[in-house]
Structure formats: structure tokens, C-alpha cells
Image 1: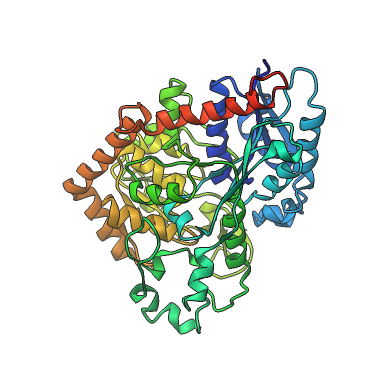
Image 2 (image 1 turned 45 degrees about the vertical axis):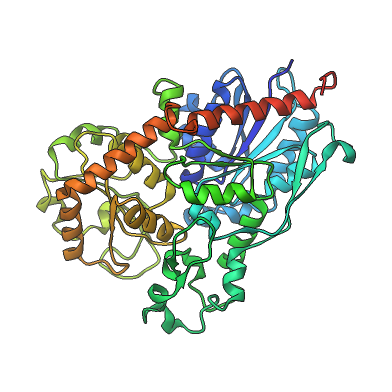
Length: 486
């Protein structure tokens, strides 16, 4: 019988490409044929940083490059979605792989997308291909965005699908973002509410599985006075479309988000937890848990960090200014943006690099604290899995929810004010580095993450959930086989 064939369609930024590649590696390890879709731009970047062999693929694992439709200016702004939203490139690849896959390539069994690429789910449904959505954020941030109204199922067999016996979910949903609007939380009545304490004093206590949280702990996209704000409407739409997939895959583990996971499963029963992905991959692939890098990585910083008080990874091309503190639009190299004398003053104390293997760095014995200016879910998971406490400086989107959980729910972090001051940074770093209790809590969470990946966690953990996911993918292949008993 032919192998199951999963096409992976990630949003083309590192925070989506890397975890999607880790999922793809897990699938391939279980004899699933994988096609990983990259944009042509990212394809070239990976070749430049890691060599042509990185995207050459091997038996049962191949890369496809599609046009991103972006101008050079859009690429510099990392405005990836602008050229992809039509879905033309993805549609053509899926159509070809579904109808005429080519020698040695099995027909597509399933399409797996990440958040922000949900249009690929629409393409797959048009081709009557089952779908899965890999959500790269936390379950808590997802629950603040969506809520199920009702669910009914249809058999694809009755609609002429080749996937006999496969069931698809039709889920009319409305968003908790929409509920926030209906209850008068969003849009904000005026901009004064951003700074007068309203965000911190307004409590939301009706999201299933979540403790009471303040409005300021929910997505920053709610911080608008425009009810038709693009980011607000786009996130509402994405949450709705992604939860219409046949299964949800999450980079988390049972102990980390137990209550909110239970609430999600009450609404969407086909949920698979496979996190922390790096920990699970190392156990499954005997250490082969890495992803692709879109930037040149400085691996030497791992060794050199042992004798230095701090390692600073600051990516080039992220800073706007004129090199002298101005607010010009030109993007600067990291070194150009540093204050005069900084390099000389920190000689022997600082290892400065534009990019590094973050997970490897966090697992280094010399690291005692992780100051994250983004607090993205991948970084939070990697820090929890490494047992490293955090100083969190949330900047946008779901980072505020992640920070709430890391600091208040898990007790492994402290939060910087949005308008950060050097004195507060020094105080918080000292607090984290000196707190034995926080380090003990971080070590306990690391043990739970390891147990979940090793199938030693009560209820099976991420290892068992991953096995169930693989069985489900294999079942799709059986149902699509004409001579299948099913």
C-alpha cells in the first residue's frame, strides 16, 4: 500500500517554518511521505545560509518552492502575507500533487497548514483533501480568539469524495474577539484607555479553561479604536478558518495548559498535543530536532557564552532609525544601532550575534536567565523545556497572554513594563538570577516536559498524542485506498 502523503504549508516566517519543519520530521520518521512548501524567497535564503543540501530532501521528504508575489520592499518589511493570500501558488501545487503527483510520489492524503495560511485549507477542501491545522501559539491565546457555536459532521463519501468514510467538520463559529466587541470591550472608545489603567483594571472572567485575566493580557490587536481594524478582523477570520480543519495540532503539553486544553477538547475533540516539539524530537530522532534557519547562525556563541555575563542575539534589519537615535525609516544593522562606546565597554562581558541556535543556547549550562523581548510561543516553550526562567517584555499579538501564563500561572518569569527602563531590567534580571524558588519551579516544568515527551506523563503525554496523530494520518491513507475494507 502507498505511503500517506502530507503536504505541509507554513506561513513563511521563522516562527512558523521551524516548528512546521519539526512536525514534518515527526511525520517522516513514521514513514509518512512529506512535501514541505517554501516560498521561492525562503528557499533561496535557506540555501544561502545552510547550503544547497538543506533543501534537497531525501527519500520520502521533498521541498516545493512557490512564488511569494512580493516586491523587494515587501520582503524587507517581512510583509509575507500580502503576496500569498490569493493562494495561487499553493493551489497549483496541491492540484498537481493530487491529480498527477509524479513517479514515486503518492497522492496527497492530507494538507497541514499553520496559522495565517488558512487559505490553503480552502484550497484543500475544494480538492476534497482532508486537512489539519498546526497552531504555533498557545492554547490560551487560541481560546481568547475563538468559540464554537455548534458542530455537525458530514460524510465526504456522500459528497463524492475519494476519501470514503472520512468525516469532515462543518463548524459555524463566532469569535471571542467578536464577543468582546459585543460586550463593549472592543473597539476602545478613545485612545486614553490605552494609558489610563483601563486595560489593567478591566477583568475578563468568562473564557473557558482560563483564569480571570485583564484586557491587557489579551492580544494587542484589541488595542484599537477602529472596529474595522485590519489586524483585529484578520485574526478573527484566521481563528475561525483554522478551527474548521479536521484536526488541531498544538505545540504544548498536558501539564502546561491542562485546564484550557480540557476546555478546547470540549469544543474540538480531535486535538493533538506534541510539545515541546524540540524535546519530543530529540527523543524520537535521537537528537535530530533542529529546523531550517533563514539567517546565518553563529554556533560559536554557544561555546563563548560560558565566560560572559550575557549573550545578546539581535537580528539585523529589525531596527529603524538614522544611526544617531533618529526615527528615520532606514533599517539598520544591529551594530550600527548600538550606542557609541557600547562594544568597547562590554568587551569580555558580551557575546553579540545577529542570530543563533536559540534552543541550543537555552540548554547550555551557562544560561541562567532568558530575557525575551518578544515572548513568542516558540521561545516560551523552548525556555520552559530547558528549565530557564524568563524576563518577559511582551511586544505585540499573543505575547501578552504568554507573559501572563509564564509569570503568574507557572511562576517562571517576571514582566518588564512596556516602556522599559534600564533600572527595571537590572532589577528583574537580578531577581531571576538570584531566585532559587523560581529556578526550582523552572526545573520542575522541565521535568514535566521531559516526562511528557518520554511517555512517562499521566495519561500518556505528548509522546502518546503524537502516536495517535500518526495513526490518524495513516487512517486517512487506508480510507483513500479503493480496495480498503473500509
